[in-house]
Length: 314
Image (cartoon, rainbow, N blue to C red; front, side, top):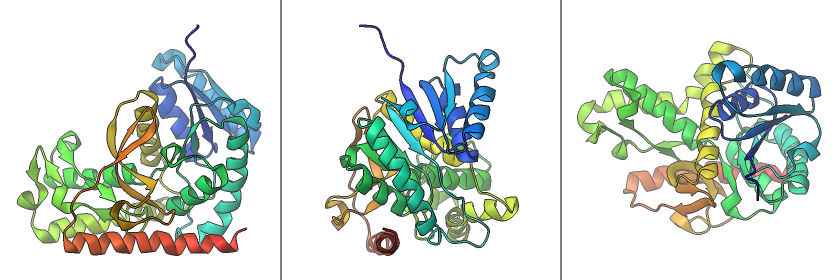
């Protein structure tokens, strides 16, 4: 039997979507289909990216389309479609606008790529991931939310910057919701194994935590129109690569909790999980101290509040 190339569908040809396609093609994870209701944007960006192939030397076919049949049999679908946050707009205000888009997208995915792994990127991510899973009806292993990979990258970058060390040697994880109640795990952050708490004073660490929580808004404030896209798209591709290559990466991703950390009402919250060829393979539980438990509870409450806003969407 001939070996079939992997296929990655990117829904949305905006900055996040087109950059997601760029990373996926550059890494030769498979052939890439960019789908957008604006067919011209999808086709134009796909052609442009494909023409970088002979220079970058990647073997990945890139196609743009507005037809869901073109995503047929995709291995991974990455949903970036949706309105970005405008300056001053909370992630919460986006719920109504983006839920309608996610519903249409998921109906197309369910019909044409029913065996795919779905990675939700559009904001507010936690609630859009919950809604996507409801519409898709896929098992929890195959619907994941991208927030933690991005937030953790930001946390690590700020630590590296403060200490003037390579980002390669910084370990830092952010769990919880992808929003203001996100939870950088300070106690578990380290540089080449040395705890962060031994390298920086408490006030410096607190400043890094605060900046991590506001990192998306910081970028949006500078850009004025639109929001971050290089790091969010790379976070999504980190997850896709773990699935497509069965890497067993332990990544901070939003998954539906079924009793872990005492959460079992269909909420999707960022936790540490093994991601491999079966999608979500294991949620890693670890002991939280009382302060962390309190913080995690706030994160879960934030997701619950957003999900309750979905009831007005139907």
